[in-house]
Length: 195
Image (cartoon, rainbow, N blue to C red):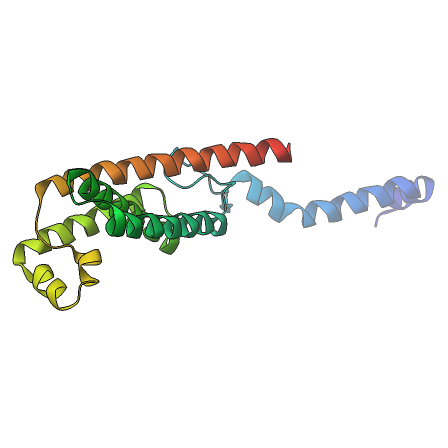
């Protein structure tokens, strides 16, 4: 330190101390300045994309609640279906009702298994299952197996009927639409209660 600097330090020791501290801070902040200048890349936060409507079940309807409602509806559907099979007279009306209840039951069971998926997923599963069962009846095996064990007819049916495919498709679409509307209504109701 030369004499001039020593004299300045003696006259203004506080200013000299502040200048020394500024130099030290500048050295510590040098890496930060390099980061800000762009020499070192910083990670950008991930963008959260909005979920399209209908892609997932409503956020305010939990998977457990959806599974519980579907399981209860499936139990009611089984009881009604057995009642139609047992007490309704044979005819076109009972056949259509039985096919519709069968497709509805398959959809509800799919929701029980995969409650977190969008409504079109269990709808597709139900439609594929019902269509495959109806086409399988062309082989004659369900009718033969049903003769040996009648309860098999409740699951696999008996003979092929193209009308059944139309009933399956309409029922699955109606079930998926009702599921979506009910889920949205429950979500809005919970949102209003929480607000």
